[in-house]
Length: 257
Length: 261
Image 1 (cartoon, rainbow over the protein chains, first blue to last red):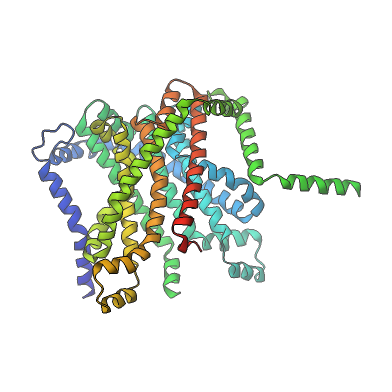
Image 2 (tube, each protein chain N blue to C red):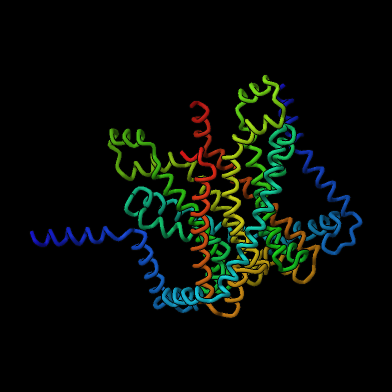
């Protein structure tokens, strides 16, 4: 009975995307509009381009930059955020500036990094890590600051050192909030990865797609858009899985409450 | 004794300056230093003073306000269109369990696709225009806003719904007395996020897609090597971003007043 209803639930969620793809496939089948080639042709081109070494040439560098930039942002954001969050004075000085920088659309900061670092890989990683840093930093500050009073009082009776309290009690307790910052940071990192490729000359899947569009290679541009869309979705999916595993204790706790 | 008292008074004078002012000045000083000495100063990074001066001069130019206007008009039209499409759609979806479950996966999928990936195709189809920016804004907002609205509609207290059904009140009354009041705070949260996103995407569409406004002004200033102006516009975007988020908080506290603690 339970398995049956689960299958039914999946079927209800799946019919619409399947129908949309079939609709797109059929409506575009004999399209002569140069901007909207038949989906069958797009798909064929997609497999020839991205199921080959083109993926290694164009998509892998993008993903590598994303990963390096994001990793830097996570480490710096968590460590700085923990200490700033633990100190009221430090927070009152740093938060206004961090809040201001976060208010700038992340993509708009890419030209600043181009002015400083030029068009190379250094610029891309700097832009990605700095943009992803602020959502993570601010969420971590907030998370450390909002530790439960009772929990904090309990640590006092246990004679934990301040650093033990911060890293063993306050940070783990703040994980649900920290994860929302980490997710936002990852989304920003992905967006800035592509923006840095649109603006910087040369390699990467963003550059590939924009150059294809500029030179009216519309099929190639469509395959690039689809690849970036799928990767954007896939990265979020991976994050969701990691989050669910890391926060399983929290979900269990909420169910008990 | 005397030293202690002077130190005490010095401390109180220092404490009078708000931390935000101190940290802003320190940040500007670090920027100034980095732009004059050290490895970064080799690049064409402008100094903090030159950038602030450029920004101040820009505030006396009519063109600046035209650029701000274009960005806000684009964001505003995109935002309104998103609301007109997504709120009724989300409301209708929320009323039917089948519709909700059918659309959930598809909407969640499109919700996380960043609009930036569509730019190459939208430039081709719509050209580097305001329409392109508006399209990107609507694409960014509709799915999230519809999902948020349908959450709100579905959150209605089942006991309340049963009661209304017992009194044989029709769907219209059910919506008016139960669904709408429950959904409004959810919709308000969705609107707040959509308003902020609209401004961001309007800038992005200008910077990467050639739509008019501040984003485009960054691109033109950067490609003409006017780095003071590039930095000044980015600073201006920060100021506008803070102003918009304050305005949204202010209006939300007044519109959904029964929800604000």
